[in-house]
Image 1 (cartoon, rainbow, N blue to C red):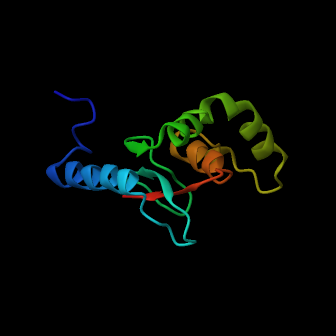
Image 2: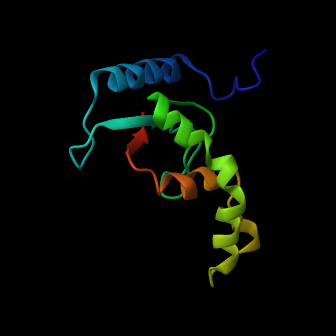
Length: 111
């Protein structure tokens, strides 16, 4: 059994396939720039999460996406310095990826 089975479905596979096509065909984002990374919308709140379940993108975009873990100390320091820091909103998992991806030099979105 797949450990991610509760998130995997035929619909998720179809969306992922569409995202791959979008990367290959250089889909345009809202600002007209090409979308370089798509991530799953399954079980996230897009206003403050970027999925850590499934993502597809160019080589450079995936390198940046996965660089969140190297940036964790800096992101946590930034979180601690904010006045509204809430212990229960520590940037981990999908919140950490969101904090990291806000600084991405390319367009990204859910598929």
